[in-house]
Length: 307
View 1 (cartoon, rainbow, N blue to C red):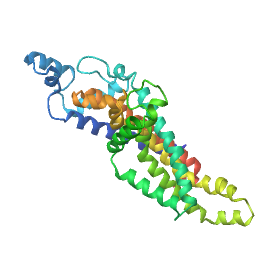
View 2 (view 1 turned 180 degrees about the vertical axis):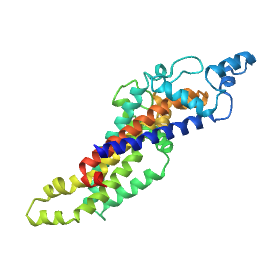
View 3 (view 1 turned 120 degrees about the horizontal axis):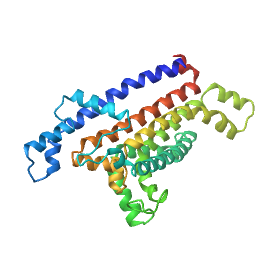
View 4 (view 1 turned 60 degrees about the vertical axis):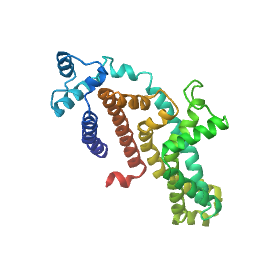
């Protein structure tokens, strides 16, 4: 309980500092959102003053942030400059991003661990070299390049996957964007599994298991791989929050109506309350997932919670 409380107390300042920085950066963007809302039509000074007072744009930044957080803790994420509640705007979009993140996470889990095990058991061979080269390439190439290339090649030219939208439902419509979104994390999962497995295969307990005459499959599956997956599971747990937050580019490429696409559109329209509302929820998800993984890691390895 002391370990859990310590980790929880560490998460509180992280949440407030992160959300304040996000709030400050969003509302420090150049331009007046009220003027941008009017477009080419000039607004009377009285209207501008009234709207700025309504959205607290004339208050100091720290006061604006304090008012926003008090409302957020009551479930009010604010409203757009057209008067629509942010929570209402996001109701139909969370499920799209969640399904995309789950698809990408499963892709990382299955393919990443599989490639890592193959590379680790065949260290120095053709398979190991191919996995290392392929993961290096994926890490080096920006996600939007991978996304457009996969969309053109696998979607348009080969017609293996839908290229845009969610008309086919889950999982069909989410397979290609999920693979694109999860490709970066997959590279790290494969490399981490490979390195951890190689290290454990050299351990004394593996030599002891072999000396007892245990079959190779049991030595690898029950002993080496089981211990090798502890850091991998930690990474996968933390990365789920990254997938939720990193869907902006992928949803834009594949025209998925999720929160990532909404963030992109809101930035273009200078809808600061929408951007802050979405990112605040994403920060909460990310911190909660990190906290849960941290606690589970302490359960798996007692040395962590004693440190």
